[in-house]
Length: 422
Image (cartoon, rainbow, N blue to C red; front, side, top):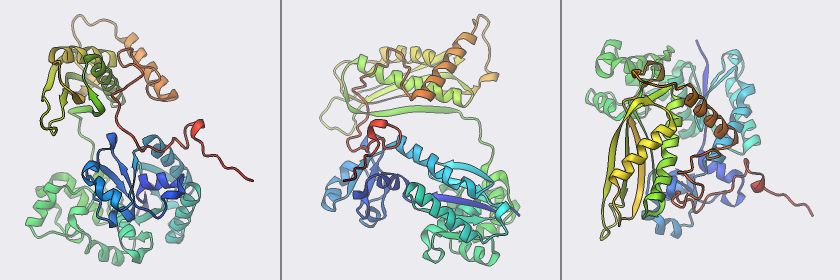
């Protein structure tokens, strides 16, 4: 039987902000999404004040001010670098490490199974805390689904004091019988509703389902989930990801855009990013849609939504080809006299690059492939937007709002904290 742990950073974005700003400790803190739009992370103090995930900042600003809630703009450069430090801190405690998300990491503890794994996990948590100041919780179990569930129990139930070991079947059953089915990893809202119609409302009841019944209700995904809850590892809860059918890069502007050149600067960035994403996934696109629109919530202002769909022939992941297609779409849909607040690129008809249909008169594409590879390598090594097309520009007056963004404490020499001793 496998022994798997999941270590999860508590209130991760807030914890990263607090790591370099001691004034945030013990006070309510909210981290806002791109463009300072919605609450995407909340400290325990902010949660206690009723701030909910996804609350629009502009609608709760008076309440935030009244209670002294500190709002920080999201700083993904900092969060990504702190994730690297967390992973470095846990590597010596596991034979294998698998990053699941920016704040969650799976660990293979099988070689350490003869130890007291609660003590082992607490030692790991202590090291993460010393190296990064970030608090964590750990769930231990025979499968990834159970480890995920154990982590939730460790975080929410004070009986576990931050580490829940569900290898013991009695403890595991006690937790599963009290854990809501809708919160089980892999159970979506539609499946949860179907389960509820059958009176299945706890993780324990999902575990006890017949395999045939599970497959009939939720396909092979639910069947494998049942197996994992029974302690049988089924790589399956990570079912093979289906071929992506589409992808998008969209952003709201920090300030309204009134001219086509400024709009094209934003669209150029989105097209370049869309191409990069295609290449990362080994895909090419056959259709591109570019859109831009005004603020539909602003009454009394002129409203317009522009969009054009462009066929990509041949299919491509070349960012410059995507940019050219996007420009044609913008020029065709543009209307003067409006204040545009959002734009985006959507790609459809995606296929694997090595399976794309060839055209009869298709030229030599190797040179452009090498160019895109070089572009990705330069921006990967020296930072995004190091090499950009002229259409994108460098001023980016339209960029998203980030009025309360913390410094790049760990990645910019100019922002490294200074310590003075008298």
